[in-house]
Length: 221
Length: 221
DNA sequence: ACGCACCTGGACCCACGGGTGGAACCGAGG
DNA sequence: CCTCGGTTCCACCCGTGGGTCCAGGTGCGT
Image 1: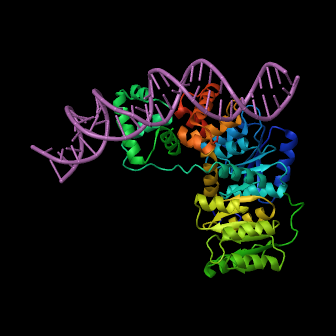
Image 2 (image 1 turned 30 degrees about the horizontal axis):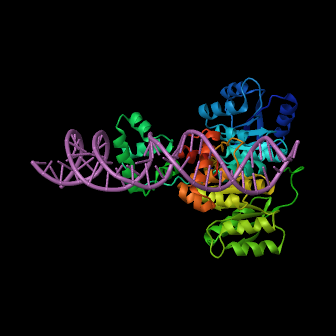
């Protein structure tokens, strides 16, 4: 996580973008930062993989929209086969799906293309050090999805519920009538009723509708 | 988002931590970075606010656990009253609640205390530039909550459902029996049954348990 | 004025759900 | 050994739920 003092070696960076008009000036301008060395350029995801195989690399600056193999897939493979290589995404698109997909694939940074040279350089240094740099809007989006989707605290059931009862509750949560539950578990409907009544007593469930809600709330459905 | 060339002025930073044994060495070591100037130190949140009022500040390095006013509350007020000031959290705790609370309050970075001097300095520079730096584990946690909480696509109901029917469905989703629904809506139980039967026909709902699931899935409960 | 959608209500029937009590089997544990 | 918890089943009762048909009242747009 930390750099003992500071300058170890120049950071070896690969620039990946299918548009030469973006890739080449970017590589050139990054080389101006004294601590960054662009060791290769790639026009698609597979070129990134071969380039990484060619020699030691610290950071890949990755576009998402590329032919042959896109940036998401390239990131996924890269972080699997070479976890020591950090990936920083640099793209024009900052929609929720792209952000989640890229970070899930293992990217350690996400910048939009209105980031300046220093912003990019800083993200590269951070990624090499194990940190993660996000554009402000990207962080806001990620935070928003993390927050809005949070109100399902997975409230638990009493501990004295038997495995069989849990099975029955799950099927209730899927909306099945007792007869269907009985068939699915190869038991009689009477037995299903017994389990249900035990459930009601143990878990303070009033009726079937309540059971459905509890099953969903407990994550069984 | 970008810095035109580079050195504008030294970044004015406030260090906030209730433990002097942490605060003072931290302030001292940060001053060693040529582009960072520690202009004040604070032992709690309210001291941060008064210090910010005293003069121009770029970044506040904020601990979360502090007496009088904690880092969350201080961050919230700071980003409201002085949105131009960036807050970077530096704390030992990296649990989901703390992370979400701090970032929701407006923090533009979140580091744990095993971050090194360069890591912290980089986060400060990024925050001043409008970016956000997260520790690796922090990003992973934030991403995990954003992902796991996503599988509720809010599947909609048919369009020809009347307002009254929607009301009834909501109450069904809360587990109420017909009689209770009738009382709550000041109508007879017979009317409730009618609405329910219409719902079943329109929305392809089989029975009451199914209705509960649909109501929850539609976000009515 | 007329049709139409919606909300309202009543009547009937019966299947399913839910409550109670009892009973048998089996495996783990004292 | 025999108890105990879990699972399996039966019988009985009845309340609620769910299906069907019908019908009055209101407000809206043509």
